[in-house]
Image 1: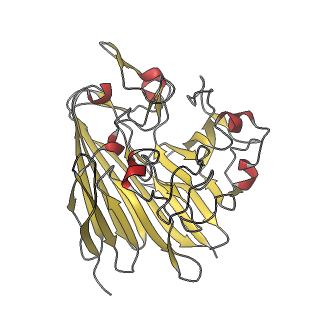
Image 2 (image 1 turned 135 degrees about the vertical axis):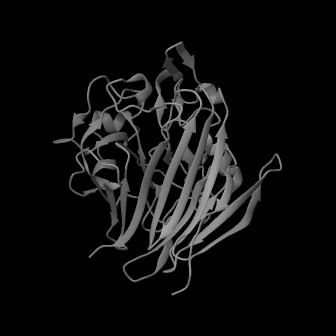
Length: 358
């Protein structure tokens, strides 16, 4: 069996002259992932269907210009805080801090210039069995209004067909941290169809309903039973995306843009989601150490972004499975804490494991 390979090439140049590199990770059985230093982003992930034919199941923009504009979150590592903080108002012992706001007066995915917009440093970390790259970033004090400096490392590895993402962060001043990967998945092959015929399962009995600004409503997570948010058995997404009666689906633009509270987890990655595409037989299992998962069904896509295959990406072209803490947690003491203290290490792992339906 051949050894795993980790290699680097130039992907493109930004308007300010900075170079964006692409890292290619191939494990001994031929599973291939591509990582960009811009946004520490997952650019491609090739997995086989039931006939053994590989295809890229990640939606990626066709140009760097798109990635800097309407496609900025595609596959990216988002932070310093994934998801939304209401009004960008961060409570601290010294009083409220005003964060950068970028969505209807709220802070989304770290603000105007989140981690997705940065060019990260990268180094190979592969072995004969694993292909891997580690990307690092320094977020200085007051970056987008957040307190203290944050040192972040994200490690991608491909091993035995699975893609693992390991996050690590330290700080010098108490600050909130919630990191995630914002890949849009389409198991039909990233340039084909919508996700209507996909089926989704979540290991979650409760979800967070949201207000008109997609901020979680007051109160504890609500039971999914009897609602379109019950994914405790695989649910065909067409039945959700075509639902015009549910108020929460309408609030999110005609689909999911919600966080589910996953069943309690231990210190190791545990099953969180399973996405299936019966047409190709592809399956993607997601395991994580995180307490929540945000599912977004690309309700806001309108064809303005052209995918890597040259096709405009329509509404519902992909589904994001963002493992993370709950939205607005720094303002919600009833949620699992996201505050990182100096001297402590933030660690998180998410694994995407492909397979084939039997």
